[in-house]
Structure formats: C-alpha cells, structure tokens
Length: 558
Image 1 (cartoon, one colour):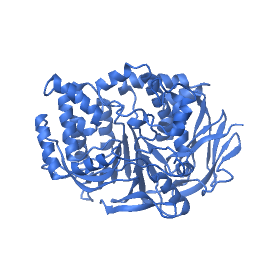
Image 2 (cartoon, helix red, strand yellow; image 1 turned 180 degrees about the vertical axis):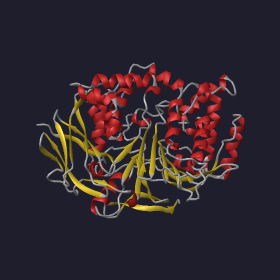
Image 3 (tube, rainbow, N blue to C red; image 1 turned 135 degrees about the horizontal axis):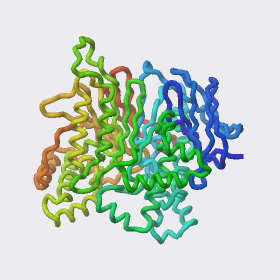
Image 4 (cartoon, rainbow, N blue to C red; image 1 turned 90 degrees about the vertical axis):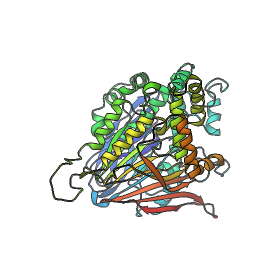
C-alpha cells in the first residue's frame, strides 16, 4: 500500500476549485475529500522512480473554509492520527473578504544542530506556529515564495553526509547537488519540517525560482554560462534542477484549466514513466529558453499577481543583453494591460471604473530598485562588460560581475528602464490600479523604495517591496554596505562611477521609505477594496525558548 512521502501542499485555490500536491511511496490513486462534500481524485505519475499527484478539487463554495483529508487508494493518510496541528483546510475567500498576501524568499532549510539554529528562528516556522495556535485569527490567503526555496549549492551537514554515502565528494560538483534524486532530498529536508508541512497544507502558495534553486549566479552572463557548460557535471545539474522545479513547484502554480491544456502534463500522466518526456522538456528549456515560459499569472478577485521569471528568461549576449527575452517581455506587457478598458472613455464615473484590478503585484525574485550605489555599480559594470571602455575593462568587468553578484535588474539597463516605463503606464489613467507593488527577495534584507518619474506622476501608489531572508543570514560587512548604499555620500560616489561607464541616467528616480531591516522576516500585504496596508514581521527568540513574529513596521500604502 502506498504511503504519503511528502505533502500535502495546497497550491492553487480560487472561489470554486483548488489543487493539492502530494508525493507518494508508490503508484496509487490520490483523493482529497472535504468535509463539505467536495472532492477530487488523481492517479499518480512517475518521475525518476518517484510518484506524484496533483489532485484537482472542484465544487467548493466561495467564502467558506472546509477541512479536508487525503486518501491513497482509499486509506486515509492525512491528517496524521497523532497530529498536533489543527485540521488542514481549503479556504475560498470572496472579493469582499479582501486579500492577505504574505511573501518572502531565501529559506535555507538546514535543521538546527543540537537544538540551536545557527541563523536564527525560521520565519515560516514561526508564522506556522502562530496560525496553528489561533486558526480563527486573520492569516495569509496566499503565500508567495520568491526564490531560493532550496539551496542546491549550500547543503546542510546532514545532507552532505547523505551525499557522501552515494558518491565521491572529492569529484565535482563535490558537496553540491548533482542529480534529480539529490534534489528530492532537498525538498524532503525543507518540506518535511512539521511546521512548514502543516502551513503549506492549509495556505495556498505560489512559487518562482531564483539562482540557488540551481546554483549561485545562475545565468549571470554568457561567459559564465559557457564556463559552466564546459564542465562534465553542469548539464545533469541543470536538467535535474529544472525537472525537479517543474514537479515540486511549477505544477502547483497553474490553474486546473492551464494544467488541462498543458501537453507536457498530459504526456507525463499518460505514460507509465514520464521521466524521458520531462527530461526532453528540460533540455529544450536549456537549449532554447524562449521556448518555455516559467512566468505565470494569478488573479485573486481584484488583485492581479504576475510572477516573473528573472533567471531562465534572460538574453545573455552582451550586445543585446536583457533580463527578459522579447517574447517574455511582450507577455508581461500583455498581462499587465489586459482588461484595463478604454483609457479615452468619456464616462463620468469614478476613476477606477475601467480598472481590471485594484492592485497589481509583480513578483520578481530580484529587486528592481536597489540602493543607489549598488544600482550605479551594476549599470557601470554592464557598460564595462559590454566593451564601453575596451577589452581590458570588459575582462575586468566580468571578473567583478561574478565576484560581486552584479546581475540584478540594474545590470540590464534597458530592461530596468522598460520595466519602469511599463509600471508607469500601468499605474496611469482611468484604468489605473490603486497600487503597483514589485515584490522581491534575494538580497537578505528588507526595505521599501518608492519611484518617481520626471514630468509625470502615476495615479497608482508604486513601491518596491523587498523581503528576504525567510531563514538565512547576511555578514556584517554586507549589512554595512547596504546601509551605506542608500546614503548621500554613496549616491555621489555612484554618480562618479556611472560617469566613468558613460551610463545614461535611469529613466526613473527613487527613494528609500523604509529599512533596511535585517533578520529572518516575512512581509504581508493586506488588500481590501482600493486600500493596501504593509506589515513586516521578524522572527525573534523569546526567553522561554519559543519564537514569535514581532512587527517591525506597519503602514498604509493606499
């Protein structure tokens, strides 16, 4: 009889349907049975010796929360009989309820050694404990995980010991992840954490990868990629990373309708073993990144979320370097402007009458707006690598780019400006939303920055909201550098550096309006009507050995 190896994860959820992801120990029929009578079933599919199912659940009632259980071939496997957590539920909020969107990134899942956590309390664990202690209290309606859900290049001591039992760690890639089986180990370590497992079973989640899901600095430049492809281990690492991401993260990002139209999902489910089909898909994504779209859209009532792939969709050639390939950029524009209505309407109704949504969330793992000095250094570096000061500077620039991780939006100047122009367009006119928020992580601290455009002021309140890490650390030197990066002397220094690179001024200016804050933390946006409120909470240890989330800032955005 098959057992439950991992999950359940409540992934997609809207007013009438949901999907629940599980990994099982063998082939079986997975069923989700809800207390209100709604249910769904799915047969498992097989990838590299592992068995998975994504169970669609229909017939849900808007505005309700129903408990559910998971059965495998008719036997109940969730919730566990000895569970200390409340029952898992599928909630279907309505537009009138508003939305609570929690987000963060960078969760290193190494278990504490000897009961002491080397990087401090885990913000997801702490959030889970709070929700479990008071299930009736307001809690997130969706959890956005903005990259580095697993660390393929920075494993725990326990995983390193496990790797040593299956291969020689003196041979590349050493104590980093090498293949699909080893990726599964990372997900087990992360998602079998009891608090996180329960939280993900009862709060819907949306995910996108960042570099550490594959390797640090993934796709930083064409030269970097050429060096990686010259090794004898990179191809297997990358294909395994993309395959595992599709199974463990991407599938759950999609709606039941999108899944029904997905030829890969159909192929994987229709064959006894879907490994070859998935591997061919991953190989195509590697050889022709523009042929695969990892970005996706979710609408939550009057809130539109666009999760943007800022890693695999890059164009890396120095003479046409962009964060998003042309097809991806066109898709993003289409999704942002779709349904906006006729901005030239003569209607005398309220200014939001043509609005397709009240709030636009753009999820991109890498921040769009950085401390000014960091932005100028990245723009300068892009100019150097592009040959603005000759080949010697280009070689030096590539070395600096890799060593200092200079590959955010600022390192793709044309893409930085294009995103700014698109945001300004989306936030202006009769169809403008109340807020446009760029949600990011990566940089292991949190801050709020607000842009402005010369000669025009969008009707929407626009903000860069950066929250990282959920569970990791940042050296003191980096903390000091980020604090200095916002200062007036740093801005003056940055301008001098930009002049050396003959960099054009960015199309947008910005100022920091909150932070920087350091610690394991999570942000929550509460969206109701056309109002928005932001709260940042950090996980702190109490004297009695428990952990708690403590509010660092709580402010109105609109």
